[in-house]
View 1: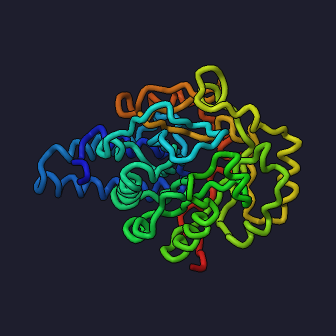
View 2 (view 1 turned 45 degrees about the vertical axis):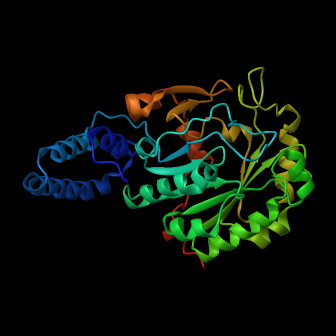
View 3 (view 1 turned 180 degrees about the vertical axis):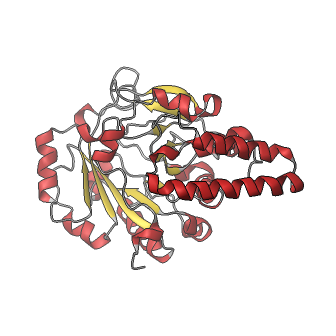
Length: 354
């Protein structure tokens, strides 16, 4: 059941986008929208009373306030769970808690959203993330709704129920050798990761979801040539990350994982990239490129500041709102733009051949 309209939810949702990011040519469109809101207010007074009207008035004022600073980016990565069925040695968002927000609260505060974990499909056999995907697309009208998953728990039934609301599904795959995946920790007993990868790719095509692959380059795979396999799978993007250490997550005395042995040098990372330059979908991200360029919400809807090499949480946006919490996110918008964080992320705009 969807949450009732309330002031906190509505203002949080609209504040993810800052209207001052729009160029002046779009101001006229905005004026038209505000006129439409005024007409809606008149109608709503007669139909549903003043509560919703107050929300709309305050939201419109909030959007047009010229004193607002350009502090809110376009993309948010919501890691709503830390639990996972894999045991990847380099994981940088580990199972330090089992907390997951009630679905009512989790539906607040979104614009462009990427759902991640942990493993997003672990909670309620994928229904939890499915409902968030549906809500984000149908109720918030987001231009892009995406998921990052290991792919092992996804079923065709999930695609049948939720696939139309999902723009991009990214599956993590660090090797096309099952033994290497086992050593890394990207496996389960009696589960073949590569078979799951291929199956999910086929379902993405059938149910019209853009398919993406994420790879973490580390000591166990940096010499591998994945070119042919990537070309055969034909993802819309192949995101290639350099293994990254985060204090308290995969390094340090209070960490669950210890990924020091997985870390590679810039030279080895460049060697991997050079081997795959012919792959047109390649999108590389070194440690320096990744640093502070992702806006991350944790399971409590707190922004995570990684500027000091660890994850320092803000207060929850459910308690203080987006604009206050984001001040403590450490987000580097310039680096976000530099690494190509804004791309064609809506499947409606991709013009894919299904």
